[in-house]
Image 1 (cartoon, rainbow, N blue to C red):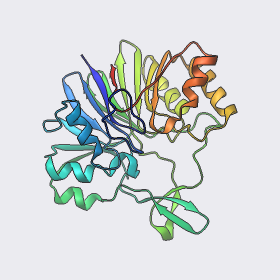
Image 2 (cartoon, rainbow, N blue to C red; image 1 turned 120 degrees about the vertical axis):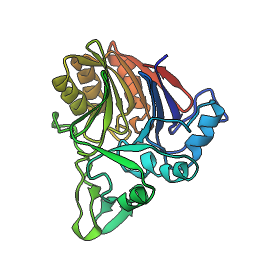
Image 3 (tube, rainbow, N blue to C red; image 1 turned 90 degrees about the vertical axis):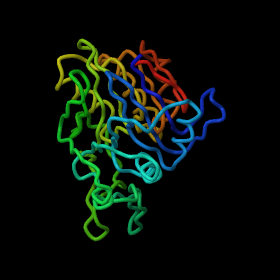
Image 4 (tube, rainbow, N blue to C red; image 1 turned 180 degrees about the vertical axis):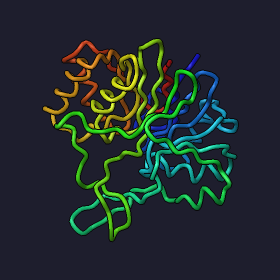
Length: 274
């Protein structure tokens, strides 16, 4: 069975002994490929993998949705005990990332740089727009805004403190799986806007996104935006959602109340059939 296992996110499901944290790590086992998509904030995702009898020693490659600490810092623990054949990343992913509040910077980056990867002699593949994993599974990035009400918070910046720029998250990668025109979309945080990203996938592929898995970055969205997002997800052709991490619980409740979309709340330890 092709599947996506949530090794860690912010909450726990029925695997009550699992560790949780603000972060996301997914193990994708699909189409004869096995790889990590994000690493959470710490080593906790590896503890949970052991609980679920998941082998993290023989992966085809590993990948980062983006370099915010809650998706990438766990790599520092992973690489101590595991060999890595290849890392797949978005371009410029190693630019330092911060939250900026007036003159106060807060570091949000991964805690390592390109030199750290090179020292480990790990092959690095950069994705620009689209990268084929298998005949029907892809990484995609370089997402642009399609909806005016989907805005990236001004506090997110990248680059050096003396020359920081607003972060548009063009490096942020997602996964697209094409099942005869019905597309599954797996996202880490959807900073560019979950609707904008889905709309761009629909434009790129001969099909429509019908299932969405991962973080939608709606945990701070007001009720008006949540309702508009729910309605537009339905208009875009989405039939099923599995939101977690930075999505907030409310979007799943709104989807259940106002649309025909089958909306699932998923947590650490859950396994989603792909």
